[in-house]
Amino acid sequence: MSTWPPRAVIRRASGLRTMESALLRCGLGPVAGVDEAGRGACAGPLVVAACVLGPKPHAALAGLDDSKKLTEKARDELFPIVKRLAVAWSVVEIPAEEVDRIGVHVANIEGMRRAVAGLSVSPGYVLTDGFRVPGLPAPSLPVIGGDAAAACIAAASILAKVSRDRTMIALDDELPGYGFAAHKGYSTPLHTAAMNELGPSREHRMSYANVAAASRAVRSAASRAVGSAASRAVGSAGGAFEVTAAGAR
Image (cartoon, rainbow, N blue to C red; front, side):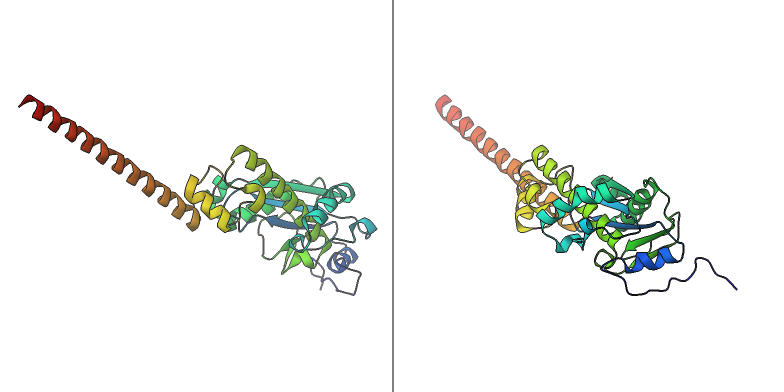
């Protein structure tokens, strides 16, 4: 009795191509990898990428690995190579407002669906990093630590990470003072201090506890400042009245 999709027999292959090679041998190609960047950030978009690599390894992609393990320089060097050598790739951004509205996990799943839908070729199988993604147009498999276990996921990881970093650098010019170019929207002491001083921007995720706390702190400080100014104004007016009254006597 046959089953579909056929069971993939995993054999030893070079580097990160083991899973893709097994799926291709079963006739389940092209294999797309999907990964995200910015899930843990409290500002900026959630960026999701999908990537389909060719069936044969390419020497120029030998440096593929989990993007978080690579230096920024290595990621920037691999970024155009992945785009040039990939059979297909797609990058989508889920803005902070949508992350707030539907929640980061749902936004992640929706972003993966959109990224796969944006590929110029239809995948026969999809490998996702970390968790199951329902609603994909092909059979799929969640791979724990996938960006360090499958080349197509590693390639998607680089596309997502570099794309998001560049978005955050551009936002640093639009919204100066927060240091987006340095911390990329993640919760660092520098970022927290900037939020507490300036208040959250339009690019902050207001559903995140630390952002909401900063917003409350800024509003509270503003309210105290207004109250203090009002008290001084009343005091000044009272003093002037007393002087005038004394002069009248």
